[in-house]
Each structure stands twice: as structure tokens, then as C-alpha cells.
Amino acid sequence: MRPFPTRNLSPLVQGFGLPVARPATVLDGGAAEVGITVQMASHFLERRSDAETLVMDGETNRYELGLAYGAGQRLRIDLVVPWIQHGRGVLDGFIEGWHDTFGMPQGGRELAPRRRLLYLYQRDGQDRLRLDRKADGPGDVLLQAGWQSPWSGNGSPVGLTLSLKLPTGNSDRLLGSGSTDLAMALQADHPPGPAPLSWGCFAGGGILAMSTGDILPDQQLNVVWFATLGLNWQLFRHLALQTQLDGHTSFFKDGGFQAVGGPSAQFILGGMVDLTRAIALDLAVSEDLVVGTAPDVVFLLNLRRRY
Image 1 (cartoon, rainbow, N blue to C red):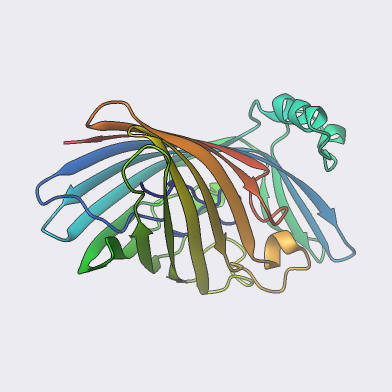
Image 2 (image 1 turned 180 degrees about the vertical axis):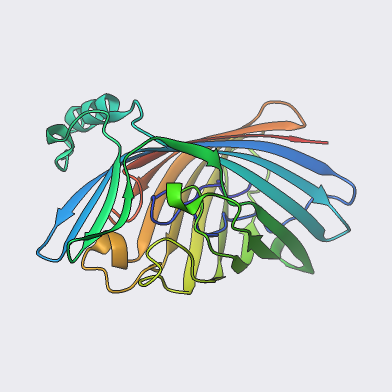
């Protein structure tokens, strides 16, 4: 059992160092893990007022190569190297059809130009943020160290993770934030019992401290709180279903729209399967619970191998 490695891929947020939740347990000393994470996010939001205009229409793909190493009995070291793509994408028709099938509102998506890329925030008649051309390239590199507490009450491990995000991505193209970010998180796990049909859960949260970056710098907050809560249902020994709730406080102040100045929450649902003793696969889908503060929908694939 481990949290889905999901993050908020809003164009306003994804460049900052909001860490994904990590399991409380660490790798055995000398063990290593290589992981590939793919997230495909579809954005659509239009808000207008006398003072502000916000348009988020496009798709963001985030590809991550993750390397982890068990550096000691209770210590894990992680390196995450992302590649980011902002583009017109291919999901508009699929999402509109999904909404029609289940009687869900389109929110104006059906009236907007198809395959448009426009991330725009205007305030007092001035462009504060604009991206209307395809962008791809390396994102901001993340370094992490995880420590597992020797205390384990009732078989429920507790872990501490420290994260450092470096401004290696191009912030002008929304591939990074331009800020250096530090995060600290606590995670507690209650693993499921012997399969089949056993339950487990996890919870965690922490604080993110950021230098002032290049994305809406005059509105950026320097401290954000975040939290994760999840339920895992072990159907069989090698197959589990999992639900997860991720949330964080706002990254910006003085925004007239919830999507700029409000907190965010995402609901994630998916499954986990052990393909072999060393290889595991996660598949999940994420929806924004606070509309506009995160992508409409995100599809996640995470493949990892232990050595």
C-alpha cells in the first residue's frame, strides 16, 4: 500500500514544489527503485469580472523519472526529474462525451474552440500570465529524503519526508516556478491485513515554504499547507483498489476567482497491481472537487521496479 503519486497540475500550481505523498515505510538498505510516472491533465475554465479575466484551456502532460535508494536502515533518498508538456491535446471530445453520457454539465467547454491552448490571467487590463503556444521541456528537479520512525504503534509506521525543489525549469513557459521550495511532511500508514478483502488507510500532511518565484510574484504566498487521506482495499494478494483525497491551501492572495485565490482539493480513484515480485503498476483518475483549482480530469500511470 502506498499513496498514488499525484500532484495538482494546474498551470498556476504545478511548477511549485508541492510534494506527492510518500509511504511511511522506506526501502531496505542497499535496495533501489526506478519509477516512471505519466500524468495527462485536461483544463477548461473561463471566468471574467470587471477587474479580472481567467482562461485555462489546454492540456498538460507531466512525465517523471523517479530514482529511489535505501541509504540506511531507516533512510530513503529520492530524485525526481520531470518533463513537462503544455499543448492543445486530444481529450476535449472524449471529456465532452463522458459528460453527456452521465448527464454532467459541460461548464462551457462545448462552446469553446476545439484544441485551443490558452492559459491567461489578466488583472486591471494587464496580462499577468499568458501561454498560447506549445511548450515542452525539463521541469523543476525534486530531491527528497525520507526517514521511517523506529516507533510502530500497532503495526502502523510513521515517516518524515523532507523535499527540496530546484528552479531548473523555464518559468516563462510554465515549465517551472522560478522559486526554490522546501517542504516537510509526516505520513502514517495502517497497512491492510492478509488478503483477500482487507482494508488499509493512510494519512499525511505538511508545510511547503517557497521563495518568491516568477508566476504571479506579486500575489504569491510563501507558505502553503497540504494534506492527503486515503483508503486501500486489498481485493487479492496482488490487486488493490484505492481512493485518495489530496488538498492544499492557496498559493496566491488577492485573487477575485476561486481558481486563483482559493484552496484546492482533488479526489483520486484507481487500482494497483503487482505484475511480478519486483514490478508494480498504478492506474488512477483524478477529479477536481473545488472547481477550477485543479484540472478537470487527470489520468495517472505509475510503473515502478525494485532492485
